[in-house]
Amino acid sequence: MPRKFFIGGNWKMNASKGLVDTIVGNLNAVEWNTDEIEVVIAPPAPYLDLVRSKAKSEVGVSAQNIFYEKKGAFTGENSSEFLKDLGITWTILGHSERREIFKESDEVTAKKVAFAIAEGLSVIACCGEKLEEREANLTTDVVFRQLKAIADVLSPTDWSRVVIAYEPVWAIGTGKVATPQQAQDVHAEIRAWLAANVSAEVANETRILYGGSVSAKNSADLQTQQDIDGFLIGGASLTGDFVTIINTKSA
Image 1: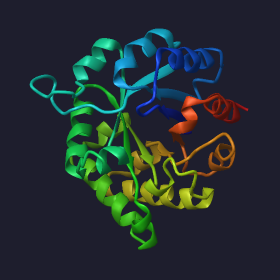
Image 2: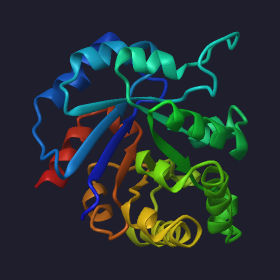
Image 3: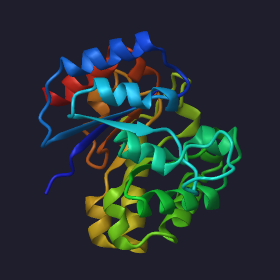
Image 4: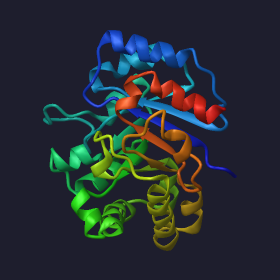
């Protein structure tokens, strides 16, 4: 059975009520085959309720991060309980900006992923290497280390609610993008790692997204690759390019 193509938009720390109206209005006006394409957007936490209330049901809504406790003295954190109360079913975890800027380790990321899954959420789990790691031929070492931390705390059945986003850190927001073949090579390595370390079924069914300066200009070439099952889009998710990318896949 073909893997459903996933088009995710990570707004990062960008939003306003006006921007919500524009982006959600654009998405609500677009049609796509929901048997073949899944669309999920991740606004900042204060806008989750507004986005969910305005977006049509075909648009999934995701948090950008959660903590691994339901409630308590954790100032500034987001709870799975908050998300479920608002009808939010997804969360991004392990984004490179969380790892780099906020120093979240592989172990902390894995703990969050396991907690989110146990709470009934679906997870976009991010992995990816920095430029110096790629230049030192350490791409798979880094990505496999990040994935192993997650695999160690999940059962094979848990993976049905996990989407992997491979995001080469050197290509995020830089305008640089991995060539379709470079992206495909890493995605194929990730799928082979899942087959060897989790199961062949999980490897075949898990969607692996590419993230790293995806745009309307390069999405058509990237989506032709066998092991690229969608995108996690940053800057372009805030513009009309996001709808163009959906339309390109729908064509």
